[in-house]
Amino acid sequence: MTPPLVFEEIPLARVRPTGPGLKPAPEVDAPATFSFTLAPHQTVAIIGDETSGVDRLGALALGLERAPVGRVLTLGTEIARLDRRAQLAFRRRIGYLPAGDALLQNLSLRDNIRLPLRFGSDFRPRDIEGRVDVIMAQLRLGGEANVRPAQANAEDRRRAALARALAFDPVLVVLEEAFDGLTEGVASELLELARGGEVSEGGRRSVFITGQSLPALLRFRVDRRLRLVRGQTQELA
Image 1 (cartoon, rainbow, N blue to C red):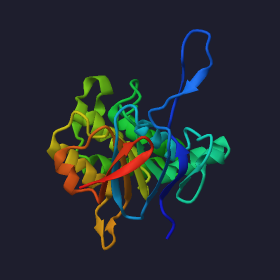
Image 2: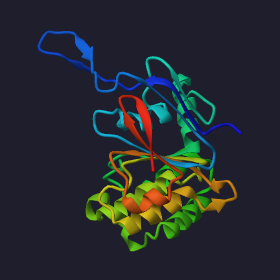
Image 3: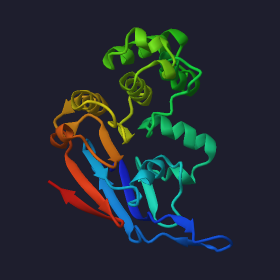
């Protein structure tokens, strides 16, 4: 079975200028290259501080950023090498919850959930509304879904963002800083929804979590927990 996500020799060091009028120099915080394979049905959390480059992994997985060397295979494909139209179509197979949720402020939470289905599928309007109703029920979004993000609390915004990420029932879900500011109970609930239930091999979906920390309760709900330091991963108990 094709691994849902593979990083091969990816440099995570950033480039920053060393002073006025000077050429940029690579940062030395993460000089080594990063390699990692996410197995099917596996839930993995990779954590690291702001110098580790962990915040770049989601963008690399989605093909939103292209590594200068090495390659990233997502569901067996280098998304960054596809043309823009093909990239947009391919990303529908991946659920992505970016740091900060990235909800559109001029739309209600429900409209944010509906948006990818309206513009990324050939579903009939009635089927779209039915799908949105199902997702909202799963995420326990009621009347709150009719307000705009600025009027909603942090928990409901995160629920809506995850609902949007799951709109196409993806086989792979990428979560960035997904549990910041949430109680451990809510974080655990949202992780289980991202996993999509259990099958004999593990979670129905493969889940890739990145961030600077992971709530203590979730440490028992992930298959692997790793720390990223200078491009190298350290297995955590």
